[in-house]
Image 1 (cartoon, helix red, strand yellow):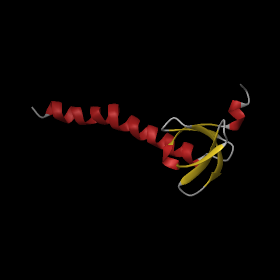
Image 2 (tube, one colour):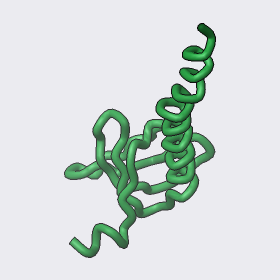
Image 3 (cartoon, one colour):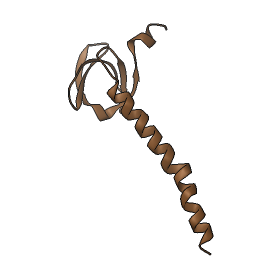
Length: 88
């Protein structure tokens, strides 16, 4: 009777918890590796280029009006480095 429950717990860990922890770790590494000049996309879909980095916030320049926005580091969803975009 307890065997299915005891087998379900490791299965739950392998299928749900472990992949989420791996994604969280990759996201943290991405945030620590950002630098000025990188192109970023925020969680809200705003795309811009990093101008400066503070402790917990980032100032980005948004085209076409060169508008400067300050966003939280945790709002960064993805990063495209300057070197990667020059190949396009």
